[in-house]
Length: 506
Image (cartoon, rainbow, N blue to C red):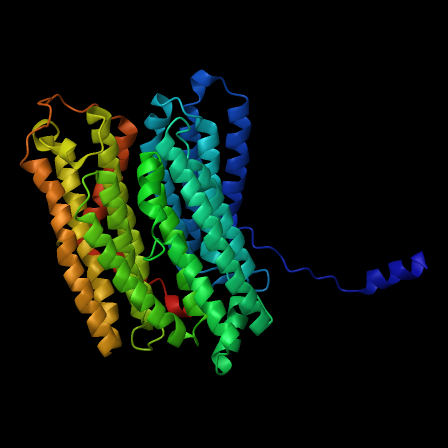
């Protein structure tokens, strides 16, 4: 019997599909980096823990190299695991965004962790794990892999939000983020189970084919709605935004920057992938939902931000409102005239938003090292004793307000263009709401600039700021990125249109 079985096995053609190691090289480098940082941290003396930041930064840069080489390859999209994991231009653009964002956050956090006597090795291990989840999210084309990537990026973020263990606000931030995050994940899983029950598959392209084939029944409508609600929490869309201000204020400022840019962008990546691949035939469901969320998110975020006196809370509500502008084009993703421009607008906005928002938090970190305060009034007289920092803050605030020729205006221009391409009355109404909100947002951004340029230092202390080199490097990267994108928008427009992204997703 054994001989017969051996003969059968010898005659059978076992052709396991080869694994494209180059395609998943960024993920593999991050996995190796996580284990390397953890191993070295366990065997390193406390006096040398600062090297963990340097090592983590090198891991991010090393993972960035295969992303560039893959982007330079003109070949077709690479598919793994029966098309459930896809490496295309869309995925590569966003992998680069997450790796660059994480590298800048490492620069911003290095000195704060050292001076605050925090656990450094564990922090960077958690950050690397979260970034791995984000990088996986860009290529996930299956409900299960999307959920696994989402939890991989979210669970470390829950712990990072509560990293200041002796701070009641930080503990509160972590608990709120965790509890509401788990609740949102439960709703999302409930919706995914309905989609699986209706379509019989977890693969996004197969779900999209079934939903596009005929009329949607009640279970499909509930499934799509619940999945959208779950990701609305991740991008802090109103009315699912209540966790964001308290979490952003209580978490360490570098973690807040990480959550407001990378974590939010990861939520948008999953939302975009689902809308374009899994829900192309459900635009009657997600369109009105996203329309309402976009209008509420930008309006509520801006109105509440007007009354804030704490710079971090103001930036938290600013992040909420910016999320509304990013959602705006997605409301018309199902319109044939606006589908391609909507996708490009979201990708470009995420890239620009990363530069200007990270830069604003870098200035906050640098100034708070001197003032030991997060109040907007503590920025008074900044131009007098730190003119370079004042100019950098002006660049970021003006860009967030959408003032030419900075990057923010190009991001907003693309978003408005995508909405107007739809040409419907609903599109024109949403564009008008967004225009009004752009003016409202300018009020609180310029309030900060008035404090920086006009007001006096609150305590009369005009001694210069001692800014560490890593924070200066982070400021340099973000200032250059914000200015170059605005002055030469064609570069980013071309980068955001690496082949037809709509076709790449499908």
